[in-house]
Length: 436
Image 1 (cartoon, helix red, strand yellow):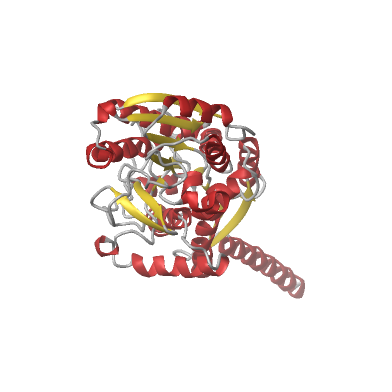
Image 2 (cartoon, one colour):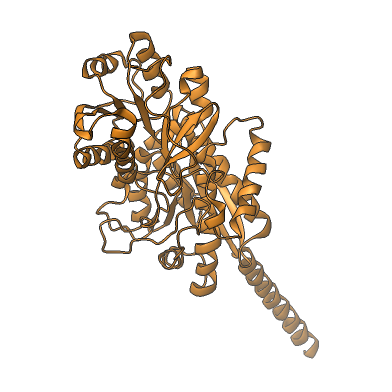
């Protein structure tokens, strides 16, 4: 009897230990954050900057995949949005419901971000946007779980108008009211938002707005738009587009003999110099791009001293992936920096202060991020507008800069506090589009 009872006790104890062991093992496995990462790896947006954003984010995620964060393993699961909003939505839902990711990170196109952010918020999952700049992603939505450290589109449009307004007399020899400007844009959420900022800025500066027109980024022919531009005779064209639409527009402009004084682009395709050079050759010279500053051009003297070594690492890792690139695109550093902010500011605080990586812990941690100017590799600080505000989830301390491509190099030319050299305005005589 005693032997049987002892045997039963032994079996019961063994079973209990097995269950406890399984529980401990399961608990150990739960010490992980699974991050769903979505960019466009195929389709037109891939070459327009999304693939470069993916590389920047992956460099950072790979680094923290080796070390973990506060005892949590960092695991990234990647998906391709294929340059299509419906695919982006489906992939976001798949990652959440089937892959069981804890959060989503990435996204390049505002046309994707607008519907995806609404869907992710509905599912009460945390979303960290590294790119999509349209104000429409966040404006008046009062999202709880969607955050964007990136500058917003209206800031892009306003800054470029101010840049030209401040140079109107000195560079063009014209008062702002006499300067003829055209605003053209792809007609998605991104283009519409930047163009709104352009229009507000144009009115503020008192410019003579001679044309404002949108077009489809997938249009096979933009010659009718070029004809309208020729009739309008702008001194400055403000353009928001991806690529290949930028290349198509400027090739047809060359064929039709369009002349102007300056072309000012706003991120996306204008942030990928290699593609501009590939499509336009020497005509890519003197084009302006508005973007968060390239981390390789940012003023490191005014930056948190722990950041320059990280910038160096990102550059070295990027050079392994894309050797021989003339200009490291701002897109790479943008995604790397914004991902780094999540991994070093949001995630550790969520784990240490709020006990884990559930959406509410991540949300509370994000709302407490308080970085001053110089606190990121992009030069700006981070502090998010809170719930109940018009732009809840938007970084109120972010800002873009204006750069100019000159002889296969990029230089910050505006604002003056960040400028590395004077802007070349208008286009030099003898260049393809110069009206001089």
